[in-house]
Image 1: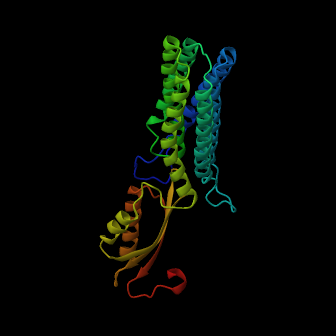
Image 2: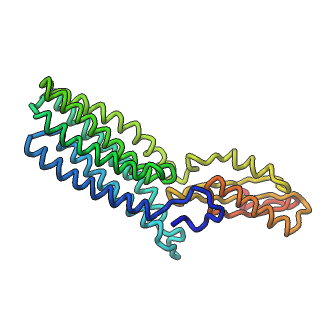
Image 3: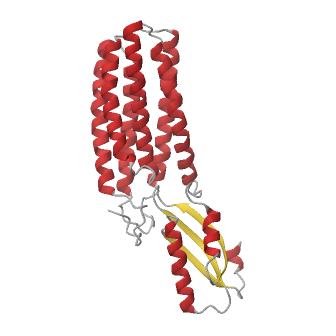
Length: 305
């Protein structure tokens, strides 16, 4: 189901059914893997498997929240919430970034503790369980690969799963090394390395979602490009008081004043407005409110402050 505001078939639309299915598959498989890790971790007393299970459980919660946010996109606007609940997608992305940061802290703490007090581990079991993790996380991450740049929550889900696959890969390598060398500290070094890798991807997610929650201009939209392309249009004298913000992680809005040259007829004005809207759709801005002024009019004081 593409967003209905897009009349020109731009590829910014998202197939919600496909995305919902991807989320449900991701949640189910990851929950299954958490159970496997907990059982194996308790049986062989592996803290690395148990802490990874905790990390994966946080991801399951993150995926569930993202799915909830995507469902909220469909809720109809009301008199109180005139945009519906679309902003929940941004808040959830922010919350997900925070969850990831907390799990990085937990992994690092655990890894440092284990570095000081290494625990004997059956490397084979660790590698085997982590191998299942690579398969589950990598295959679910691939479900989100195509659409990850279109929505911050989908990107967050992709990052969660891809980082989990990296964690599992680290654990497999660690398990094999431990099996052959009995260097039990390898487990902790891998834990710290993985935490650093996740930190880099999460930092960007945190920055982007924080920017959108503060009504900042979305990262992929460039104010100067938009202004220049509209100023080049025939009949346009100025384009100012531009405000661009995100309604959801996939939809953007703009309000602005469009100053037309003197002597523009009403019919020409309609054409210019249509051209402006069309240009803005190319920049993935679909909710547009434009106030037009004539070049010979004084901009009202109220509007121009």
